[in-house]
Length: 83
Ligand SMILES: [Zn+2]
Image (tube, rainbow, N blue to C red; front, side, top):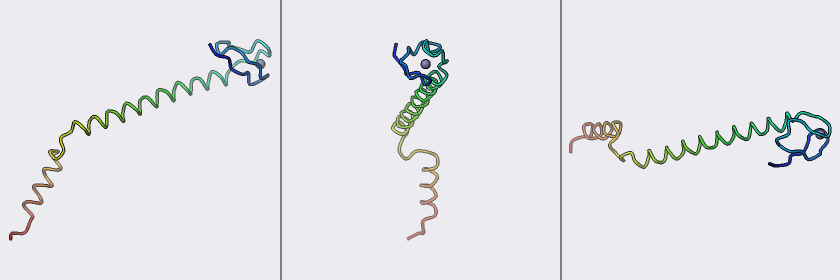
């Protein structure tokens, strides 16, 4: 449990309180900022997971055996001028 400041009267109230006991102002701002924080947390963890998966995939992928690399290698060999 943490104390947050009421945006209406500035008094410290519980973050679990639905409304400020002093002025009765419903904590719309506090609850929405909390939702944004959760959303940001999810977004950051998804980005970190994608980043980690990308590194893992690049690390696991064989270096020069992708179909495009093989095709380019083949193309260079066949199109090279004879000496
Ligand atoms: Zn208040």
